[in-house]
Image (cartoon, rainbow, N blue to C red; front, side, top):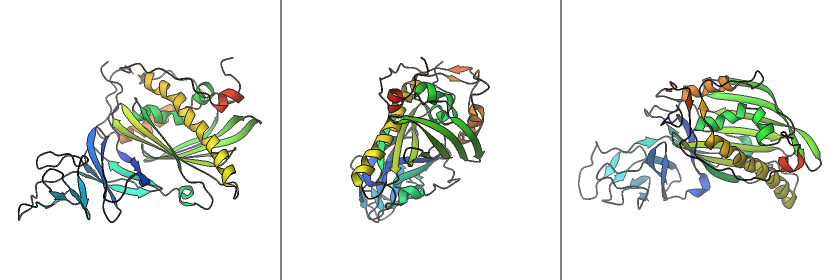
Length: 347
């Protein structure tokens, strides 16, 4: 097979930056959705995403481009464009060029993230990015802690983990296979509720992992049992077979002791972040089996796949039975608390 998977790039809202990474007047080059892009913040503070290349003679806005007020300025000849991509000024001409348009992507700043809407046919957003209360409550929750990863696999392979309860026991050495209580879908939204046992130095702790997904690019996952922790998990496709994953965490404060808040919260967050590194070689080296041979207790994997299929505007060509990776990606040894304090599922 020459294809890594049957999936094109999905449409939806995707994180293109953390808000504090982008200053007013700054222009940043990006490569997402199989395209070259320019991310910029106007002098009024609003973020924008446009295609990267000037329609005049092709200069890249992200390499030397500037911002003038609420307009993006080409570094080559000084042509200006508004946030919608319309040419507003040619400095050496009395006329503008109405045909010179730069594709614009709807962009919002919410929960400390900059999110852009992608659709291959430029259709308008079909749902909104929700506000996550915990990330907007500095009195009760810690400042955001962030992690990012480059994953050589399609979005759907990563997201399928959420409903694959058994892998938590065998990849992450949780004490038991989690109890998946419910998995419900409603249009672009999906909701998963589960009970989980966490191994700790003091013994096994009963907890929960409850996840809400808003399309393919944004999920809110709440962990409870050890310390209330909220994760915004964001995957943005770099291409159809590569993702840039960003994790943003906040933890409920345990009173006014900043040192305690930092140490307890950081320890749990680090554990979750390490588990991604355990998943990564699985994702990158696994084949996509179109009709998997499932166990009767495997959970709603096919229900998840049906939900995911709605985000491929071009459709899915799954005419092959198996799609295999084109490279080999070695696994690293990751020391997690679950491996130190939990029982070995393979013993």
